[in-house]
Image 1 (cartoon, each protein chain N blue to C red):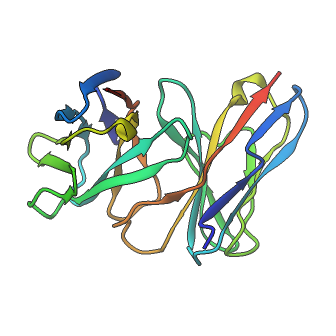
Image 2 (image 1 turned 90 degrees about the vertical axis):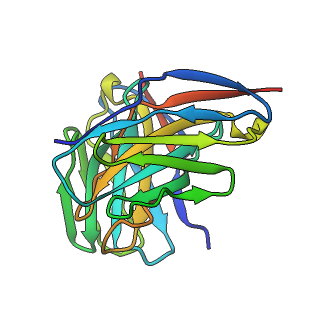
Length: 114
Length: 114
């Protein structure tokens, strides 16, 4: 099993450009989430999904879109990149039910917006 | 709202010694889960140990153990026989029994000195 796979690992964007961060998991996990990690702030939830076709906003959703057409994939779209979106992005997944075992994380995408 | 506080931004320990990382949290929930995640320079988020709030017994995983004080809302991590590979950022995290969002602390950077 590959676990949670994120692509790309690194990306540089110009202000105003759009792009999609890819996330795929092969563990048949129902729940998937996107977090961003900024220095001194820990990880903050952007969007999450509890199953195919169901998504909801987290703590910092502005400037990002998500969709969940399959159980395996949960892409994160930056509509018009801004320097404030420079961050490390993590995708994570888990089984439904009580979060006894937490989430399994991908290896992250470091995004720089210039 | 849930908050997680890690009051030690940086710590160091001699190889083979024991170190304790502090974490406090604030919640009105009665049932929840607590986690410690390790993030080495590779950026990968690795689950170290977890604790279910309704269990009074402190969790242990090999050299890692926690001191869970529910009334005091404290969840410290003890690392025994520290190894060079323990050098990493450590994050304390909280999750409700029914929920999809991690609440992370700001992290403690641990350096193991040879």
